[in-house]
Image 1: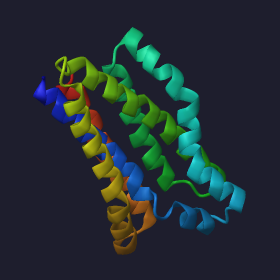
Image 2 (image 1 turned 135 degrees about the vertical axis):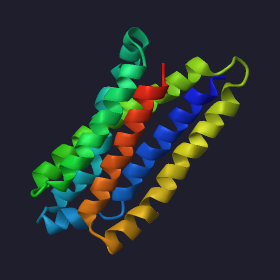
Image 3 (image 1 turned 120 degrees about the vertical axis):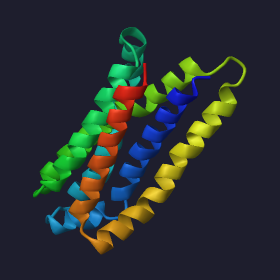
Image 4 (image 1 turned 90 degrees about the vertical axis):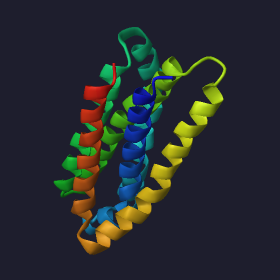
Length: 180
């Protein structure tokens, strides 16, 4: 097992899931502040997953053909840019657009990180390492809303978007530097 690669993979997964979780508690409220209709609020919440449905089916195959690192870099870059873009979303349509783009970034990161993990895992211990990986993934998802609530109350909702962008940017740098 390449432990450095494993640490980078789980760290970036924690960061990206933490980032996604940070915005979860207040996106509907933020959309309401932008005068979103109920339909638009629903789209803000579901746009992320809708994009994943459309892209997850072929992103993995493309990474098998062209390599994993480029997709990991692209996914984290898209997550960082779209998180920063949400700071400037002043209409429900822009917020929905940035959530669609975030879903694209996540669909280029999550499954490819899992595939990369499969590539570096010694045969016969896949379950063990995937268990660690998923524990970290769920930790990020679980802690994110709490941190988002704290940041939103202490500072502002746009601050949470900035924190999410910075975290994904750090994950991007780690991926570029430490993964083969």
